[in-house]
Length: 100
Length: 170
Image (tube, one colour):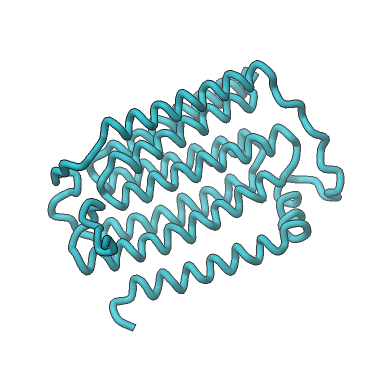
């Protein structure tokens, strides 16, 4: 019997993998992909509860999350391209133009 | 039984591919593992009776967003991967430690809620349609019309912003 707890634990594990990716990688593109993994973990939670409660509202919010993820990817990748054009790198350790 | 087998198989693939996404050295391979990961998440949505969302996941994530990532990976031609640089201020162990602490916390919450499962709420009676896509569409165009419009406005703003950011000169 698969309960919502199973889905929550899967979603938590996926979320943690995303957090580890954000924290330990230095390639900004991989960090963005980790953020996508985190958003997917959130979506799994929403859909699991939508299934459990027999209510489609969770899926509606998952659609909104996907829209936000698409917007974030477009803008984020635009920023990466603009940054790469200036500094020839995607290393986040060198992204300190706005510091001080 | 069949549901359990499907769930464990799909979740194992999701987690394996997620680990590969963040651990592979080659960024292109990382993006390709991301596609596989998204496809297995779509399979999980089918298991959860959310066919519309599964289709959206394949079309928007695996088809759109990942291709965008692949384009950017191809455009930024790196001679030296960022991981080759050494940074003295880096705290990898602290990052792993914090992530493990959060995972432990979530596991405790999961076990706690396993002991006392939430009671199922009554089904939403106001929806006069049947079928997954119809239900989602009905909600999007009635109760959630304004958030839906705001989301479309957000996408428009993001599109214009991305064009302005990526353009060499206006």
